[in-house]
Structures are given as C-alpha cells and as structure tokens.
Amino acid sequence: MKDPKFGINDHFKLSDHEFEKVFADCSLPVHLFNHEAHLRLAWIKIKKLGSHTAEQEIQKQLKNYVDHYGASEKYHVTLTVAAVKIVDHFIRKSEASCFKSLLQEFPRLKHNFRDLIEAHYGDTVYESDDARLNYMAPPILPFT
Image 1 (cartoon, rainbow, N blue to C red):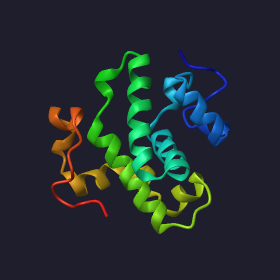
Image 2: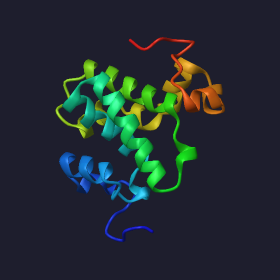
Image 3: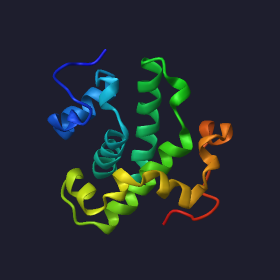
Image 4: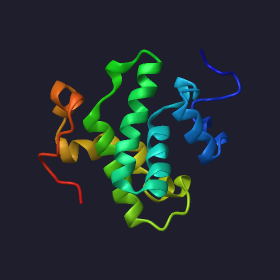
C-alpha cells in the first residue's frame, strides 16, 4: 500500500540516517525503493562502512527487505554487488559530498545504469539463474 505523503522519489524527504533505518527495519514503503534509492543505499553504506563491508551489509539487508515483502524472486546477487561496485567506482572519481551531487555529476548512474551493467556483463546477466543466486564477476570488463 502506498503511503500518500510520499511520491516515487520522495525517499529524499528522509535524511540518510532515517533512510538507512527504515530500510533496515523494512518499514520503507516498497514504492520508494526504486533504482535511485538502491544507489542511495549503496552510497550511504560505502561512505559509512567502506565498499567491502557495504557489499556484505547491503546483500543481507536487501535479502531481508525483499523477503519481508514477499518478493524474494526479485533479489539478484550479481546485480546487487555490481551496483555497489559501480557506485564505489564513481564515488572514488568524485568529490561529491552528498548522493544528490554524485547523481548530478554522473547522471548515467540514474539514467543509463543498464548500459553500465551491460558494458561489464552483456545483457544475459538478467536472465541467468546462476547470476541471480551467486555473485558472478564481470566477464567482459572487470570492475576497477
């Protein structure tokens, strides 16, 4: 059920701390957890924990979140880890002090993310059951 006080990109009405908390306790409305919100979560966790620990924490929390909402079939390990690695790559290239600034500096994170994934994996990663269940390193272009 949609919360009438929130629109699709209104996760920004929440501070990073509030966003992290409501995601972790599964009270973030599902319609607010869109692509941009996924990337924001990666930003928050990388800044707070570093990239390796962020990968582990996001996998655990995202699995819990989708299970809570009965959408476990939507969880994709490879895409989750790849997204964290991609956000980390752009953080290292940026001097942005907040997530919104990162998106302004690198709008392809928001608008051409599928192209970023396909540059590393091709388009078959989306249909691969193995990639959905287990992390696959990118076969085309490694993450740096």
